[in-house]
Length: 264
Image (cartoon, rainbow, N blue to C red; front, top):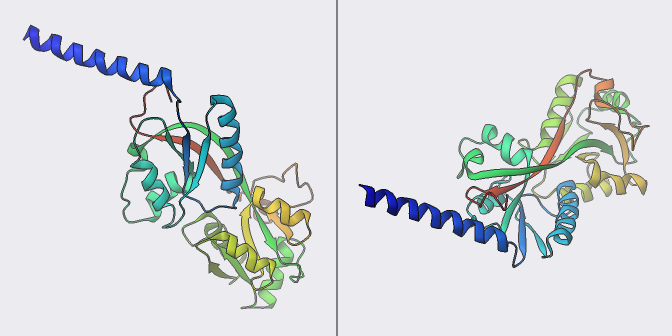
């Protein structure tokens, strides 16, 4: 019995020392971030900034890899099944880790058990934007226009299970309007259709919206944070029309479960 205990103790110490040595040498090659979102959106913009800054801190390249599709499932599954060696991380969204378990009947992974969350990176609010051909200058005017022109207003979203789709549905319900939803697998295509005037509205994260607003190509009607943003003080919050409306997303960096604690 004593011999077995000593063997188990020795094995445990080897594992601990091995993990410690691995962590001490980390990183000795490039690190990868996997994103379950498509390139070009707000998630992508912030994620690449974080990857670039982390690369400078750890002295190794941090490769940012987009694996969109399946409502976040493809990228999340790839990250969950990656080796827990500290060289692959998941640049996660609230949609992937929190919303998907409630909007899918089943997932090929458990978001809670599959990952160790390292740090929350950012919180992001969304903006309701209109093509300049839409006469509305704010949300109340949009609601009035949609009611006066049934069937003529459509919103580009990334699907009913995604944040833009949820925001659009919530506004429709509160306003009593029937604005239609045009789902896109890639929101970059949805934005292009709105810029071209083929669709009237789009709801996207503020970082992705800023350039289009600055160029005057899209008109901001409202933001989904509880209060107006300091960066866009002239853009009303949806809550000014519908009190209590507050919808924001967040990004976090996570590792597949099993990465040595020292690396985390």
